[in-house]
Image (cartoon, rainbow, N blue to C red; front, side, top):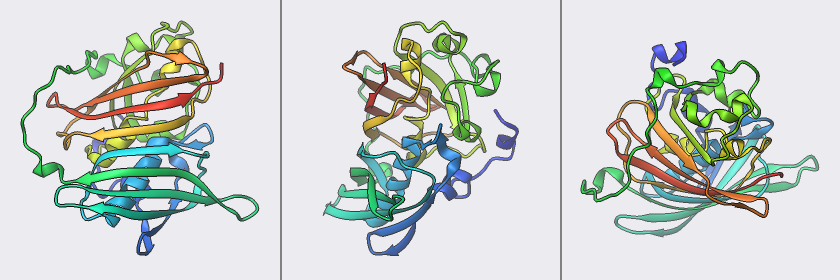
Amino acid sequence: MSEAALVQAAIGDSEFDRDTAVARRAPGVYDIDLSAGWTIINAVNGGYLLAVLGRALADALPHGDPFSISAHYLTASEPGPAVVRTDVVRTGRTLSTGQASLFQYDDAGREVERIRVLASYGDLDALPDDVRTSAKPPAIPPLDQCFGPADSPAPVPGSSAITDRLMLKLDPSTLGWALGSPSGKGEMRAWFGLADGRDADPFSLLLAVDALPPTAFELGLSGWVPTVELTVHIRCRPALGPLRVSITTRNLAGGFLEEDAEVWDSADRLVAQSRQLARVRL
């Protein structure tokens, strides 16, 4: 864990919170300056962007916790000014549904839609505590036996500014790609947290599902793997401590693959799940 994490940032007062905060300009309209600190190569990370839209919807809807968010990534977002426009679709006693889009301007001054989201929100603290599941936490070696970007002997393909803001320790069995010997299995597992020690919450879970290196690396591919669509389910509020993230790909065909992610907290609870469709360059 980085030295920055020795002085733990609080939820609401961390770099992640500042960089995802939106300013309400008018009802349903929010301004934000997308930070270059969450970029991969030159593109802004999709999980970070989802957290930005998630915060705007939390302000626009009567419920504050994301339960399910489905996002379509239409064009690559860039660091700099952006506008989020939200629309309340339906409000109910336990769930509210809204949609949101993020826009930026091109060189000609024309507005370009980057992402469109449909989401349902509720109150995680009001959910019953019953659990009936066959899911099991991923088997990941202890944190001190895993490796992060700083442990790499050479620059990691696709590394970027975002790695400085994460506490990311990868399972050695999913690191063959970094040593020039990918396993051929579409698997990636890691311990996850924010570098400044901020505890996890529903919005940082939106980042966690899209923060690991692509499973395509372990399939022997390299380069940018842009997200086409990403759906995230938040199941409960995470306990204190680092998260464990497991991502698998079972099928790559026609230049597209799926990534199924599970996020587990320190209490061995499945706190988030996601599936995304991504494009690869063969």
